[in-house]
Image (cartoon, rainbow, N blue to C red; front, side, top):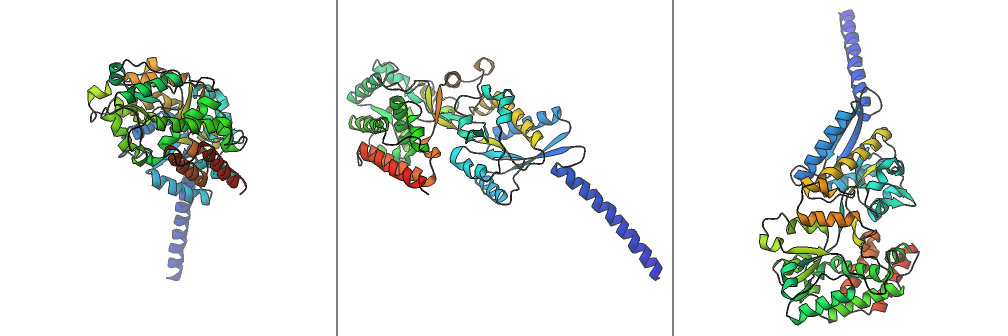
Length: 437
């Protein structure tokens, strides 16, 4: 009896060993270490429900990649935005990031780079990809001269305008700031709010300040003040603040703008009460394909570049904006070469499909002769292909505490509660304090 039981136990142990060995082999294959196929673990934040078009494009790109790389499988995990950020935070604390995932530029990315969690992607850029990006986009993902993310999306901020209103008052699209001021004065005299603005959200007013800083002092003056190779008390940055208050005094903005949200300010433009609206290109669908907005209005929306300031150092082809999400490769990935190949493939394919299928402007240049898009998109993309510079949104460049100071001061500046010189001085104090930490 004992001998029979022993024999059965031995057979069971042998069977269990075979099963465990098989599981171990599968585990190694799944982690990308061994087996006939290497697996790239990829996390993104475009669920099928809330981001249907983006999700569809991602799925299609993965199928194409796997078809061309028979020895690689892409294992996907999809989470919505906040869940994604929380999980990435948890995974990073144990150095278990996916092989490829999404990141944001500048301040968001910095802790990951400092923690040596992201791999440098300079080799991917140098492999023929660099020239396909719009100037200024990959720079937002660079730290200490190395690039740690490749951007997928891009938003810039043009000035949208109501063509019908401009025609009614015989106004031309301004190319210089003095021409722009003439437009403002003409509209104001005729009882039309020149500019729609909801500055309760504060970053909306920052766009106006950033453009004036760029056009007066050139593309580097604001960046240098923030990265501490320059000063916020640079005369150009004080002059930009002074110009903001001149616009306020000229009644350039709709009534009550400092107490209105961006959506409330935007409604002034949408209902034809204001002639101009400075905002990111994420608004393009509202002015082209959104059928909830009357077609007559959509057909009458154009855009122009922020005018040059006479005597200023800025270039009219320099934009304020910033890339959206980008791709990273984990530094400790066991399939780093394959992950980098996937990232390169993804960027190239995404650029070809995103704008036409999802209305998302990619960070790479788009050949507008090969895509079917509303004319407003085509015009913006053509301008982007000729961009001389992209200045990243100021609050994105700053640490959280300095960004809060900046945004509060923006609202005070527009509310004429702080002098331009004090506006600059308080920025400088906040930045110095942060630098000393």
